[in-house]
Amino acid sequence: MPSFQPLTRDVEADAVVVGGGIAGLTTAYLLAREGQRVVLLERDEIGSGETTRSSAQLTASLDFRYYELAGIHGEQRTRLIAQSHTQAVDEIERIVRDEGIACDWTRIPSFLFAPPDQQEDLARELAAMQSAGLDVGMVGPPAGTRDLGPCIRLEQQAAFHPVLYLQGLARAAQRLGAQIYTQSLVTSYDASEVLTEGGARVRARHVVLATNVPVADRVKFSFRLEPFRTYMVTLDLTDALEPGHYWDTVDPYHYVRLDGNALLVGGEDHVVGRADDAEERYGRLEAWARERFPVGQRREAWSGQVENTPDGLAYIGESGGVYVVTGDVGNGLTHGTIGGRVIRDLILGRENAWVDLYDANRLPRGNRLEWIKEGISAAGHLGEWVTGGDDLSDLAPGEGAVVRHGLKKLAVYRDDQGTLHARTARCPHFGCVVHWNTGEKSWDCPCHGSRFTAFGELLHGPARVGLAVEELGQDAQSPG
Ligand SMILES: Cc1cc2nc3c(=O)[nH]c(=O)nc-3n(C[C@H](O)[C@H](O)[C@H](O)COP(=O)(O)OP(=O)(O)OC[C@H]3O[C@@H](n4cnc5c(N)ncnc54)[C@H](O)[C@@H]3O)c2cc1C
Ligand code: FES
Image (tube, rainbow, N blue to C red; front, side, top):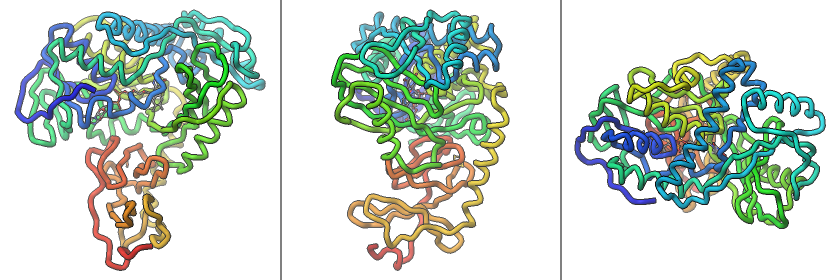
């Protein structure tokens, strides 16, 4: 990434954008291109968030089936949904071309397939995608695959390298006059000002929060988002395979992206903080891919976070005097790009046909019963305060455990040298007890998806601060 400095003095701008992922950088770039004075503030470095963990499939084939979207939003709006994602892919292509960004941009089709007992759903999805105006047809299994059965082929989708794209976008925004500051954590904001941890302020006519989940949100978005961990492995490709993105229709679903001589295989999602079995999930992804694609050795494995909404659409637009982009539903590269366009048009007072669709204040329809059940289940985690804790004596170096300490529960991490580090286990957002994530070595909150490093520093909101330091008694400090 190009390097930037922290913000150390007060500045003024037309718009201040918080967050250096695809949503923030696209918004900053599009506004700067219109001659707006833009300041972008990033907590860590550009690309420190979910964008660079992505499999980078740029597609209008969405996590929700189109027949589900038509049931929730109606046919006319569903055509707008398909149009917005298709145009987001075109917008990225335009930016890549106009700015000469070398990011392995390529146009490829998407293939959606289903297990034998879900073939009726596949036919239903084909009809719904056609009604939504997408260029689709049913085809036989693509060359190089095994037992996929018939597939819906969606033409003219795309892929790129997300790190290279963000680099190019940051340079282009900077060239157009946007000021980018990194290592500049935003701790509070109102409609005309944001304040950084170091005390420097940006005064602006417009404030945009593109922080994946809004900073310092207690209730406005947390209860309309459901955070999921999602897993990915890359495997060597051992034989020819028809280029494309591949998805199945099972729940939790699997997806595949061909990238040179590697296959990226993702899925096995679960609600954040509600499972701690990353290695098994990586293994299941690998086994699933071996049955269907010509693959060899595993190269890499990682996980990331996506934020679902009940109706399959992101929340984009003005809310409480600031602009937000959140709720990626696993299609955050296109949602983030749509976000940039919608917010640019709202700020410039231009018409935009997608404003109502993505309204950030809407109470989503969709499967409300599921969401009520989910809310009750999240609230159940508050009850963990009264249960017992783990035993520290068998805590291995590099691992964490939640232990009871008098009336408190502590999140205790034993570092590689054997020293214990204790933090409160109480999530600063709403007080649920955090859980240890062995795969990522982090503390994850099962209620609304906040995450913290092993040492308690904030990794992912909606919490605004890290886990407070606690003292452990001398007894506990002796090596286990
Ligand atoms: C494994 C995986 C695979 C995926 N695959 C796809 C895919 O194929 N296609 C697709 O469309 N989407 C995909 N997604 C989703 C997509 O990558 C994300 O939704 C999208 O990149 C989110 O972009 P963003 O800009 O909203 O957030 P981020 O990229 O997370 O950027 C937010 C930034 O805000 C910064 N920030 C946070 N708080 C503050 C603060 N207080 N002050 C200053 N800065 C702050 C963070 O450091 C971060 O850099 C995938 C996600 C994962 C995890
Ligand atoms: S994220 Fe809401 S309580 Fe932890």
